[in-house]
Amino acid sequence: MRVFVTGGTGLIGSAIVENLIDHQHDVLALARSRASHKMLADLGATPIRGDITKPTAWVNDLPDVDAVIHTACDFSDQMPRIDSNLLDHLIPALHRMPGPVRFLYTGGVWSYPQTQPGQIGDETLPFATLPEFDWMIDGLNRILGDEKLHGIIIHPGCVYATGRHGRTGLFERAITSAQSNKVITIVGGDHVDQPMVHTDDLADLYYRALTNAKPGSSYIGVAINGISNDAVAKLIARHFAIENYRFETISTQTAMSRLGNWAEGLGHHQHLSSAKAMLELGWAPKHRDIEQDIKACATATTAKR
Image (tube, rainbow, N blue to C red):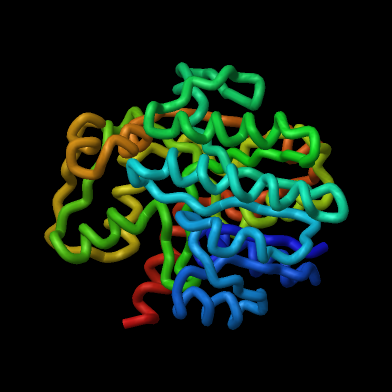
C-alpha cells in the first residue's frame, strides 16, 4: 500500500512510519523542515516538503495514495482552524485519486468522559470532549461522513515512549522538571488514573486498522489502566535516581494556568477498554508493565549522557 502520513516525525507518527516500512509499505510523509526531511529519509520514507498550516502549497501535488494516516497535531489554540483548513483542501485532493482512499484520523481518549470507580469505558460511551479538543469531533465526523473515503478513527490513550529518537512522550515534562528543578509535579493527586499506551503498540494498532478495519470503525488504543499520576511520578523519581527532589501536587486548574487549557486532560480520570481492537484486529500490546518502561526510559536517558 502507498500511505501518506501527516505528523510523520512526531511521537506517534514516527513510530507509525517505522512500522509501515517494516511491513513493506511505501510511505510518504509530510516534512516541514530540513531536519524533518532528513529524519524521514533516514527512516526509509519519501519526504514531501510541506506544512499542515499551508496545505495549498503541496496538496495538489500529492501523488496517488491508497491511504492517509493523519497524526499531525499540537496543543495550540490555532489547531481547530489548522485541522479544518487542512481537511478542506486534503479531502478534495483525495477524491481525485483513482481508487478509494482509506483515511485513518486520530482522535483521543479525552474525547470520552471521566469514568466512575469500577467503571470501564469503551467505544460505546457518548463523547464528552474536553473543550480544547472539540475540533477532533468535527474532524472525525467529516471523515466518517464522507462517502468517498473509507474513514477509520483511532483514539489513543496517553502516549509514551521509552527513549527511541530521544522521546519519552507523556513522561517528558516530569523527567525534565525533576532533573533540572528537582521538582516532580503531580496533577490532580493520587486519585487520577490516566489510560496509557506505548507508541510502538499504538503504531501496531494503526497498522492493523489500516490493513483490516472496516470503514466506519473506531478503536480505543489503551494498553495500561489503573496507574495514578502519583504512582508514575514516584516511579520516575525512583528509576532516575534523582536526589533531593520534592513532589508538588497541583490542581487541574493550576495545570491549565501554567500549561494551557489542554492540560485539563492531565486531571481526567479514566479506565478504558481496548477489547474491541483486540477482538476485531488481533491487537496485542506488548508494553503492559509501566515500571519496566519507566526504567527503560531512565536507561536510555543515561546512555545518551
